[in-house]
Length: 358
Figure 1 (cartoon, rainbow, N blue to C red):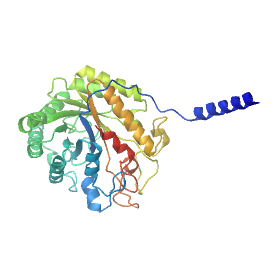
Figure 2: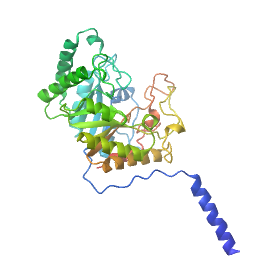
Figure 3: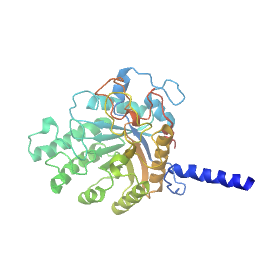
Figure 4: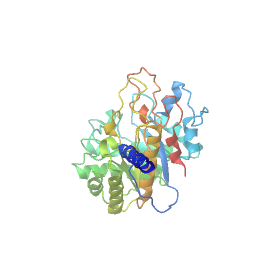
């Protein structure tokens, strides 16, 4: 009878364990020095502060978001800069002021120049309104002088010449289908950085790994320092082993340091305002990593391990860390990202913030 009971018990254990998908295993790399870049994008921070919301650290103690990041071990803060946005956020003066604060707190600034008045990404690279209709030759000068003004004032430790420029920038002049013009526009931005902020490290930023080798081949010979790759499971696949292999190949092919320039993961599939979220379905998740606070932490631990495994991998940046529902729970123009932020719906820092530790 005892043997029969033991057999039944063992079979039940097997059934239960088979019902839970396993978290994908990423083999550990040999111990390496601390990652150079452990960062988060905090571009919405001025608006979060203006909202007056009480923000708390993981212990529940009121604390500014930048202080929480710094205390967790983050050493880089990424900010986007738009040419002439409709609101001050992401405009030159706001970004300049915030950059100074970030440096005063002992962290480095990673500046993303969109060369647009609003979002630029693989599907949208709109010329700023003030530059529309000008000749290609004048556009080259405009890129140079705009970049010079920005870097001369801010002196960022890292700077991205464009955001997710898989298909080029400043369309139609700088579309990837016009590679000579695209290279020349990038070159003018690079020249301004090298002249007026020579210590800045220049990043070429691509959305996903699929287009990276083609794009980087098109700009071979340009003077840049680092490759940045965006990775989101919804858009770029849920196979973490494939991600590691692709990053390794890209870094090897182009002989540059590489980092994950954008990534994020949900701590819930719920919402905290009336604005549709980008990620809200189980199909957007990695099998075995749930949309929970523990799952968000597990995902980021995997990301950190992956970049640590990649030869010449130097770090990661979490995107939308601060994008909580600061406009209110009934806002229809609020956050599309609050379920992927690093602060929960009570504005308390989540466990995933520990991934920034050295």
